[in-house]
Image 1 (cartoon, rainbow, N blue to C red):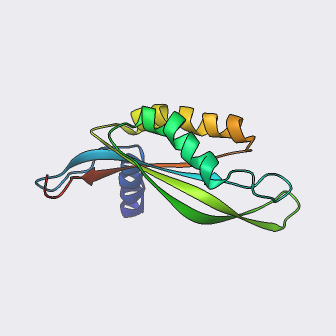
Image 2: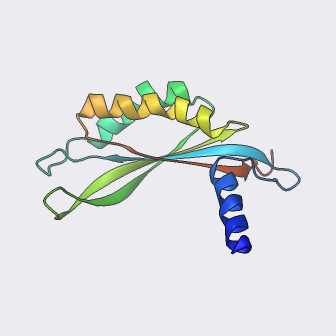
Length: 138
């Protein structure tokens, strides 16, 4: 029983954002992964590739001028009626060296909110995690 309690305590500490012990040559970083659905409520494409490029240039790049990664994805979710809806999506991957999870959240929240407003989307999935990172060869 004590072993289970200790494992739960260790898991809670790690989940709470305690920085990882990073290997030599790397440092702590926060990673944010954002998934943006592209369809409207009627299931038709609402956000074109040109719309996405404009959004990146106007909203994401100014907030993350040091770099970001964007790629196409396919998403699915269960609607209130119980049916599975599938839609094309865009994925934004952000690595923020030396940032806490709180900082990462504060920096990504305006991007998600801007997308929701601009394209009348219900939500944007945001995943935050702590990790170690480096640029090899730099």
